[in-house]
Length: 197
Image (cartoon, rainbow, N blue to C red; front, top):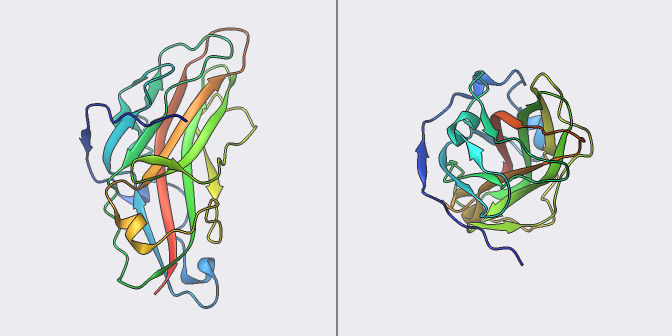
């Protein structure tokens, strides 16, 4: 079992949700009986798993602003470390019931040869639940892709305490699927927790 290694923690600045082109979720997105959704752009602390290609400028994943977190050149079938973000500072009322979690990642690779290695949620600073990686290659021009949904719990029964904990977040790893060297780039990550009060 892989353990997550918290690297030197880098406190990241709060990023406005408006940096993403996607519309803000509405209560209807979370289901008729739910009236609220909590949205935060990536904030808090970054960390990397100790295996694989290292990420440069991890705070480039804070908001979709053209400033990238990127890997060194990855050889064929070489994976990156996880780029993870925790300590998101979500505000969810006491007694709320988590209904689903969605993640949007703005990602790309110059040659289009990079693919998801893994997209995982983080619980108490460890990987948790199902991997939501996508098989589509990362495009040459960075573009957003969504993982999860207002009703997807990623195989975990999340509590309000889990998602407001400093150890809750998301982690993304990439892999070069091309024959030549490629670099993965992430321009922004947003995590949305849908809940019923």
